[in-house]
Image (cartoon, rainbow over all chains, first blue to last red):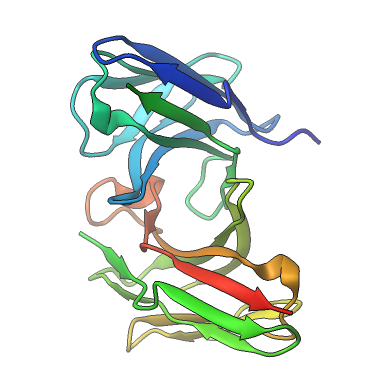
Length: 113
Length: 120
């Protein structure tokens, strides 16, 4: 079955712009989580959605937001981009209970110039 | 808050030999899950092995096994018969099972990672 699909794979944006990243989970998975990966901070949790509801949010400014649609696809948005937002953004899906494992996508590499 | 520490930024191993990657964690919870993920240059995080804290038995997946010491809060990964394809960044991760520390059972907390090189 198809894995977790993230689009686009690469993105270059200018400071001050906004960006939207997309994640399509594995069919049947209702939970989608987002992580930011940088060389300095490592992997940091952004937020998690389950059945269109945000269940948990990491310690990121309000410029970072997300949503989940009824088909479980999720988008995350970053407004007023800063150079420090340059990172690999990873999406992970799961069935949604605490016992479930996560399956990750290959990420979107965002570069802010 | 939970923390995960991987004290070895880099490790190397000869092909066909055994290597152990270290991970320690800090938590006040009694019920949780621990994971090892592998991230090759393709960037996709791949689940290597999972351990449930309430299980005494160490998890094993083919050439991969863990040494889970709950009292010591230690969770090391042993890779036997190392192969060139094992070369990657390895991350240890923690997940609360009950959310008793406030809604954190819906996220993974990762260590900084260990870069494993396999020499032919």
